[in-house]
Image 1: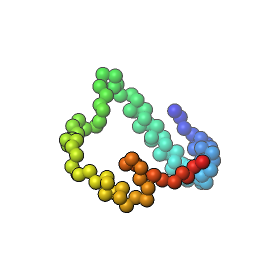
Image 2: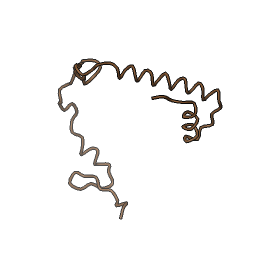
Image 3: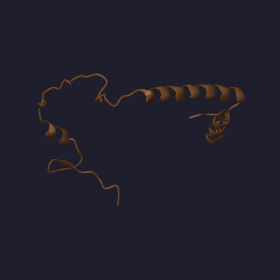
Image 4: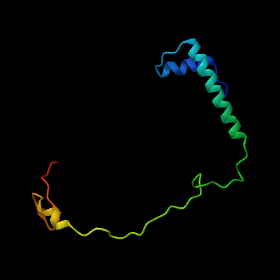
Length: 95
């Protein structure tokens, strides 16, 4: 894709970015370099490469799913303003 200096100025105008000629030339050079890098990456044959789920082939260490604390629901609900059948009751805020 060929990018011209006028394209850079037009995009800057559409984005409402004030840009002078020197900045436009610098941006044009940077964008041209990015497009060249993209063209190089697209030229690499990757059809025989299997996709990886992650860049590093690591296994997640998992701990056992076990209860480690005692049930304190009654203590917590003892200080609640309203409780019914083990549930906290709150005032209705949406009609």
